Length: 67
Image (tube, rainbow, N blue to C red; front, top):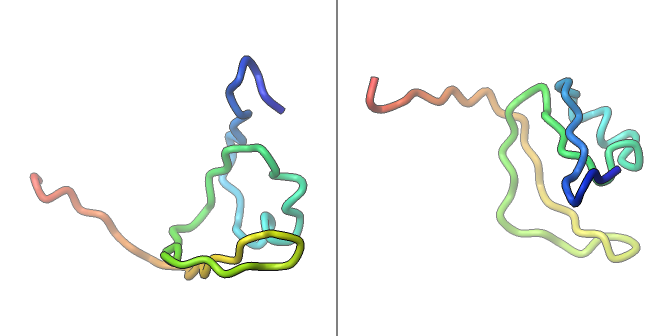
């Protein structure tokens, strides 16, 4: 999973649904999601000591203000 202290990077973009369905498959990886998401700013305690954070899919389009 780790190579010389660095986490392994999954090179392909994956849908969030895949990560939610099998979180253990992506544990310890840096994952690129297929879509853009807004992450909530407040977590809530979840089962087994986990943290639940609201996630909303978004079609945000970033435009560089210098262009």
